[in-house]
Image (cartoon, rainbow, N blue to C red; front, side, top):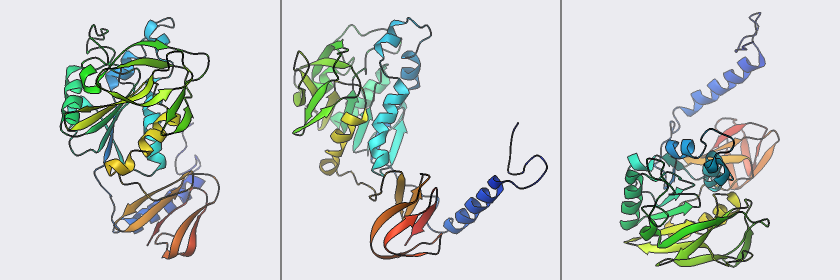
Amino acid sequence: MLFGLLDHDGTPSWKYAEYKQIASEFSKLQHLGFPRYRKPEVAIAYSFESNMASHPPGPSNTVRQYFTVGYTEQVQSAFQPFFEDNIDVALLNIGHSKLEGYKLLVVPADYVMDAASADAIRNYVSNGGTVIMTAMSAKVDENNQWFDTPMPGRLSDVFGIRTEEFYRPITLPEINLNGKSEKASIGFYEVLEPRTAKPIAMFTNTPEKSPAITANNFGKGRAIYVAVPSQMSVIGPLVRGMYADLGVETGPETPPGVYARVVEGRTLYVNTTDEEKSVSINGSKRGLISGVSYEGVIRLKAYNADLVD
């Protein structure tokens, strides 16, 4: 049942023509700044241990009941705003990676907080980094045992909070962030008790009216804690409001479904949708893949790409 570039009778299939087009385009690109590499300014933590520990076997397992949204989905939600904004991101095991040089570190639902990861976050913030950590993080140690110290475990002083209570409200939590009301898409929140941290966003419809997001100055850096699981409706406005202050460079502006990167002064556009997309540009440009001259707008057919100079 496997199908390749040739059908079973040896006839070239539609895949052969498509692969031929890809090979031709790659041949044009290989001397125009590719392969492209640029060290990202943003990093997102990914923990295989947290993924496994948050999804143990057994339908009635307590941990499964605690995690209202899967670990992978929360990491993807943390990645989504950067992906849409055409910003390069590194995906790291923070306990085994060098964090210096990153302007922002996002730690979504990192349930298992081992000593190496906690030390890495502590040193990163102390030396001037900015970290965002979300609910469901730092609950158990490397032995999968619930912390008997204030949580987030091993990092309560770094984030300047204590969090123990958590609830699943019938009504989705609403947050006042930067003067705007943002509604969470997940019915779960933690009650934060600020110690040295300052609230930067508040819940508006929970019984406690507790902080939804806190920020704590620690060493030369800042540690931000989000009291809801990682989700685009909250993470998006939060990180986008921080780009300018952190000096995070955003990528080219594109319509939904079109992604772009600057490569040695040229811009590569990729249309990932099944419909034609238009990208506004200033002046005249030339497509080095298509050979088309553009004036004021680039029109990309479905699933097509072009390197524009």
